Structure formats: structure tokens, C-alpha cells
Image (cartoon, rainbow, N blue to C red; front, top):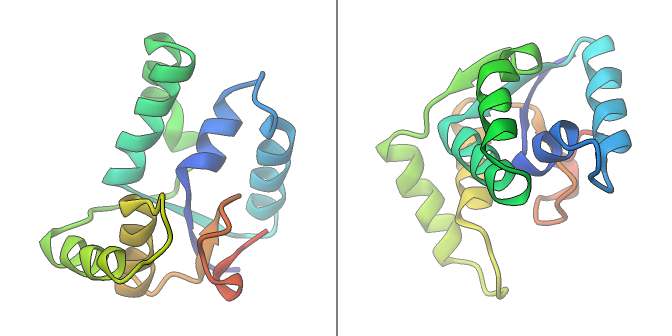
Length: 132
């Protein structure tokens, strides 16, 4: 079908069986994979996911994610200096309290790598980029 960035909130939910969104995350990943979507992850999403898993559950789950994420992710891309700069431009143009820099860097990544959208539970992204 296409290439989609996978947000940390989906990955965290898929790795935490006790998470309120666990079933939804696992089902979404399976459905999209079955229909031919290729999943992309950035270095920032790797860092954010591992950190959240470590904080919410512990290092064992963070280590498991780091070892096993290739079972879900098809392609890794790097948020380089230019992409980070564009992410900062997007971030600094925001007005809403609580804006995530990583979400803004995700927007820059989608643009740079010409991805078809993002698999996320977050409402920050434009609706036309949401892949559900």
C-alpha cells in the first residue's frame, strides 16, 4: 500500500499488554501489515519508545523492544541535521501548550522521506496523514 511512520504511542501500546490501547495497537499493526503497508521508524522514535517503556514498565521491556522492534519495523531513517532544523521550525510555529518536538520532527520526516502518513493515536497530525 505505502510507507508509514509508526509513532511511539502505537509502539508503546503494542509492547505493553496492560496498556489501555494494547488491543487496538496490535490489531492496527496486524491489519496494516496484512494490507501491505511498510512501517518506518526514526532514531528519535526508537529513543522515545524505549524511554517510555523503561519509565512505565522497566528496563527489561525496553531492552525487549530494542531487540525485537525489527519484527514490526521495515525501515529505519535518521533524523539528520536538516530534518531536525525543519522539526524545530514546525515546533516553534506551534501555539498549543504541550506540543511535542518529536511530533514536529515526525512531520518533517514524513515530508523529507515522502512517506504516505503516520500510524498514531495522537490527534496532533493533520487528518489526511493519519493511517488507521
